[in-house]
Image 1 (tube, rainbow over the protein chains, first blue to last red):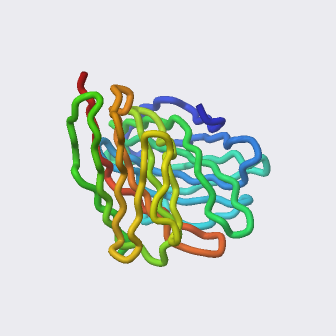
Image 2: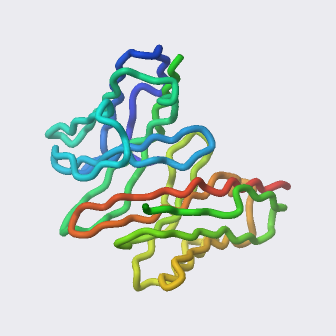
Length: 115
Length: 114
């Protein structure tokens, strides 16, 4: 088991609502990445935060936004939920230093269902 | 557009047998290639990571190869066990200097039967 935790484990929302997912990174890590994984698909990169700044973004609309806090925990916010947002949302933390892409450790994920 | 293609999509083998999973990619600029194991409903767990200069990396019964010229990688599993049943995902990162964008394959679903 990694030290990355996510909450909640499961969540059910209705179309048009807003949702906030949370992630606590592994101790000592300064980078958090978020991924969306639809059923039967590989994870899709949403964005990455390094030292509280967005450090890369995948092909997701602006209604997907995030935050990283001084303790390096992170939130993923999704506004105006759509049915296609139903997925497993994964958070991964890593220690970025010297410009090196280090190993990411994944949390267990949050299963979001949009009705 | 960066892409990672994996084959086969699914695979069924008997316990104790070996198998090889394939990954082809078009990612630029290439930083590294990782293989992950993902159990159903869980987060992926890293098996191997290879940079441009590495062409093979082992982790127990898992051996990954990388051919940077043909942009191909494989994951070989030796003496499979029931616990190897999972999805195996190839991930290729593009970027440099502190900003890296990973592209995930769709995964190969492996089922090991007794």
